[in-house]
Image (tube, rainbow, N blue to C red; front, top):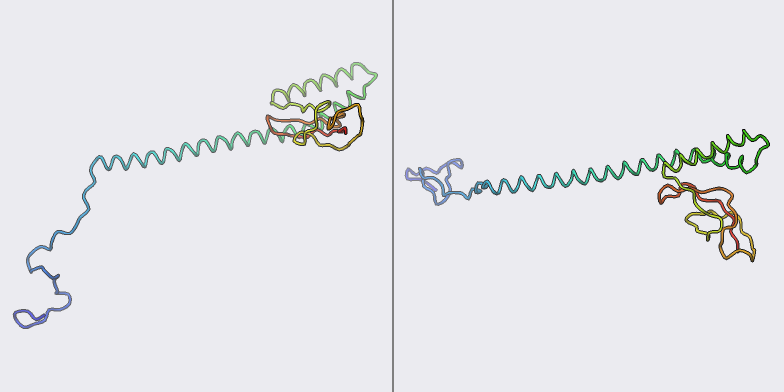
Amino acid sequence: MPDKKGKTPDKGELEPEGSEKGTAPEEQAQPAEPTAEELLAAEKEKYMRIYAEYENYRKRSSREREALYAQVKSDAVTAFLPVYDNLERAIKTGCTDEAFMKGVEMTMTQLQSVFEKLGIRAIEAVGKPFDANLHNAVMHVDDEQYGKNEVVEEFQKGFMLGDKVIRFSMVKVAN
């Protein structure tokens, strides 16, 4: 639009409609300043989220640490199970030298004591019903003097750490 002097203003000189030169443009909608209570509530929410994340992390890492400890303990005991088996065979075989046999029995008692302190317990098998969660059946025998699915012989002792089976009992099952 030409001004009073007949000139058309440049693009950069155009003013918004409804405003006159020298007057301030209408007040633009400015965000209201947050109140102290709103700021406090926002910071409290932020703090609570961080605290909850930290608590979840602490609990998760504690569970992972306990699981790792149980796994390491299980692996260490598993490494000693062949020693247990050999001591058990030596005791069953017997020996004429009483002092030697007494030493083998004492060693076996000490190993069983260590297992007990670590929370390792033997799985009872002979005379119990067969349980696939605890026993590994390697033989089957038909014998009327035993009940159905009864474990009649144990070839290798099984062990548990808490509720976890470290080694299944190797057994013979009847009927």
